[in-house]
Image (cartoon, rainbow, N blue to C red):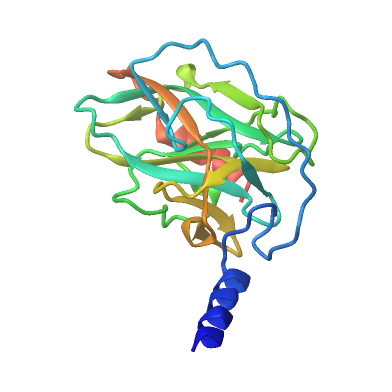
Length: 227
């Protein structure tokens, strides 16, 4: 009986999807080459959120653009009681400049799940950015790229479930799963990271109240150029 139990325990360890040092969901190992922690953003705001649980959290692992997901996203509810005017995103990442669908936002996902409109280029708002760390092999990436989107006038109405994230051009920072579900665009679908024992690190800052939103038709025109 003891032999059977030992065998089962070893089987669980071998087949576990928790991949400590791999940047790919197929389990391919990666050599540790961590970047230095970045200086936290000085931007002050009414609302702050990081999937890690603390602002400017330092990733302990990561995932690659080809092996974990072309985009990393998360969905959360604006339960502040006020509209949120998005000011800044923070992503611990590395690699070359993104496409036009670099940072992405859906302002009304409709519930606690991934968007059903398609990949990152179907988002309601988007923009290009260049990671501060240009080395696509940094693992885990610990240097944040902070993106000021104040002028984009992205308004998240009170009560809305909304989604934000970014285009991974090299590696993206992650931690062990902490109860927050994130997703990667993997194999043509939004694949949840939870079954793999991971949470992607995604950060946002916002102020209460909104200015006049930009017409979505403008972003629709931009998106059509990259379909």
